[in-house]
Image (cartoon, rainbow, N blue to C red; front, side, top):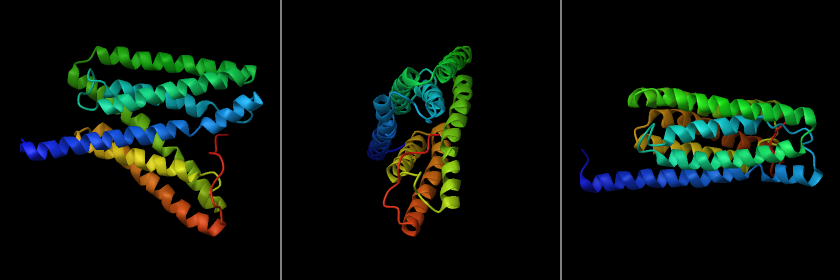
Length: 232
């Protein structure tokens, strides 16, 4: 058992890390807004894909469920940030469906229905398990989902190395990704939640790699800043 003074510092650090993660994550959720402003202005989704937001919604829903006390106590900030993220993703998807072509509209709507069914299945199955089994079941799914999200930038990293340009790797997005993953890695470690700190630790490493590549290739290519994230 920790001394009272040390326990207070421990609690303060944990809370600070969680709040920092929430703030940085909101900046990530806001990053697609220029893309959707363009979609609304042109009244067309052009060549943009709705799939990142479909997967983002599923990831946020699962992580929200994992962060609730009914599944895992002590990590409520995981639930708060992902519930906010789920709202953002849902709004983006509604806008995307409104302006997409009919075939794409039907496809994204169908995938949205599948996400709802999958999430409902996770909730229903987990509720039938005991406390510790529920935590492990949802935790493994949550960790796999988060790792998949953090693994997706590997495509952009490969593109940057091949083209020797940071055109499609925005600095602000890379920095926000690093800060979010680092904050929640620290938060998970302080709360003793391996399903939080392990995947976010991987995200921290990948985010750091992106920042190093940006620093290196921006000097070589002379790019002052990148354009829009590659969403096609």
